Length: 429
Image (cartoon, rainbow, N blue to C red; front, side, top):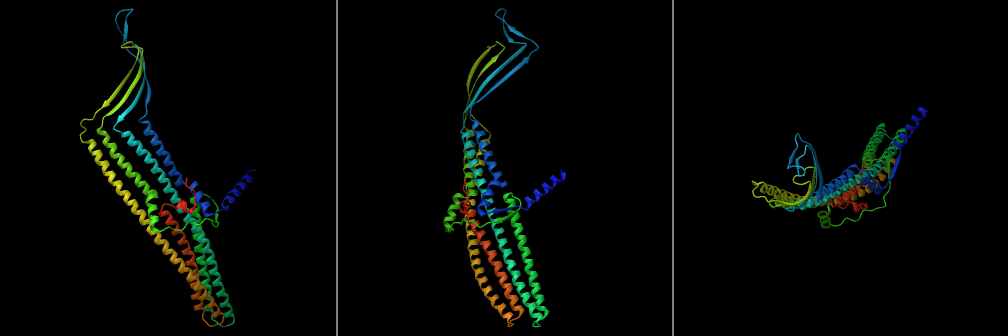
């Protein structure tokens, strides 16, 4: 029985290891947002910020507490004569107090702190947006790299076939005594070189697949499926820059930080103002002095007169932080603008390179076809054929590589503009 269970477990593990997951790009992106640990961690930060807001709200709400005391004294003291005697110090004494405390005014410091806490929640949400955008870019990059690796494998298989064709032709010529053994050896060397390129393409495939598995938390192999979703047309540079300055998570974070710093200045100034609180309660005790039970209510206030420059320095520090936050906002907007410009430049460059690579491939295919026919007719040498063969192989690789570069550059444009979710068709929560 134990052997059967072991066999079943091993079979299950093997099935899991070799299970294949079929995913479109949209499926991969949605799963990435659902299971990625970085995104989950950032969402927990929202809950932390919401709890902090609730804590600060509780600071201005009424508080009710009960305090009690049980006491054994070494003596007992009574005032007066029986039957009108009043015990002012019982030997066994007890008392309890129900107290209500309500802050009324504290220079509006609590209001500023609560407003800061609400902005803290917005910052946590922007942090989640940033984590989600980074995850989408990472998943999309790994997915596209996997698609490209599959295309590279096909390319290298075709390149191996080119080298095999030359090797067969050279072998036939050699057996007919038309060429020397050198031509055959050159062709065999070309086959090995093409196989080495295939091995590198397979490594790129495995690396991209591993990255995608890690981002999506899945096991087994992944088969990328064609996507029905098309990215929207890229707007002009100014539109993208305006969108980035208004919606990028890092810009919104810097904007919130500036407002938090401004509120901090006002909060620190509040330490110059008086504080007012209400305190009331019910006291019940064994001792009849001054009474067995009574209630009380009190307005408590405090007016700062001299604080040895403490508040002045607090305000000065808060103003410096406000200026620092303002600079941070300007820097975030500058970074957003330049990120968009660099992403657009990379996209234009990759589109140009892809167009040239396709033209190069067309010319290389025509060159190779003619060179092979001339070689078969013994009108050119194997070196000429090898040169055109290498040109064709390189052109095929260039098309595959520049296709990936173009697709990644397009993704990075939307990421730089802070709009990658809408671009890839992932719903915003």
